[in-house]
Length: 488
Picture (tube, rainbow, N blue to C red):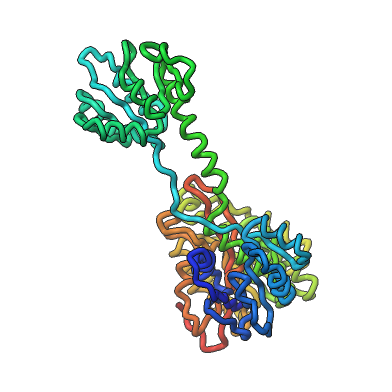
């Protein structure tokens, strides 16, 4: 599928909407961008909708809607009347279009953001540590040991804090330490701090409490000293122990976290995938799960023979064979797996699940009525077993997931691939090498020579939670280009 993005207005905002659609595209999608439409493309996507004004529409098109300026109402209605679909930047846009009487199919796709993070909260401490420990500097170390204080930047102004600062930095705490500042610089510290933290527990003052309040800075303090003389002022929080202190600090961070959480779904990846899914829907390539592709492909090609690497418990085999039985009276299925318990090392290395036994899979598939042959053992050996039935119509590769195993299986399967064979790979990952190491078929797929192989990524991409984040996984369909086949 080829999409032309028509972007006649090169504003910063529109470039932010176009740029993500030019990267990380699925294999089945080609996207380019220009000031003018290309009616030989499958879809022209006008970003923004104003690009349609005065353009003669000669093919399928879609528009990106942000808003309507006063006086442009008729223009947007005329543009919408020539479209197949509209993407709204926000729900407000969808409401505006509805109010204008636009009944065009509409999808809301929120813009994505990337790399924007809040600053740490600045916690100011002013005063010199005393030899008797009266300033209670150790409470910062206790705080760092007991809680995650990475959202905070401690600014310490005064003398005698050298050793505490050294230990805090060793614990990974962000600390700025200055022991001699001017009156103007100290006032700047107060004005840019999110809170002054008073640590001392025997105080006649402290004077910094008054200075902070004079600058309008909130104060976190024990309940004694001068604080009793200014009681009732907003922005005063009291604590007696490290736990209460952390609660007050957390209250400084909580609204920041809430604001972050409000836009956590507004990601570049989400923006891209919403568009990929919409393009699929517009061209009637809709599936609920990646495994729905198997019966769909079987229904399209009516295979008489199916080979599967990685039979497992027979889930995919049953799914494919039941669909195949609707179209062919006698289907051959050859399945390859260990059909024995895997060791823990094998499961980790291959990112695999435990397969069923040979007899259990035979029992599961027998009622379907297909000819089932199961090969037990390592595919490095079993795929060499002589087979003289010619190429298979459909090959599904879902065995070991290490690159070495996938490369070995791919090489050994070449004898079973003909000009019309459809090959489907599972476990195409889009994660970084740091996240997944040498697992997944993406390295092999991405290096296939397109002179000999046609590659199509099959959406949807699914997200499986891991300890480090989400594993992004989809299937890939590979067919020959009908030239002399070359093994990569």
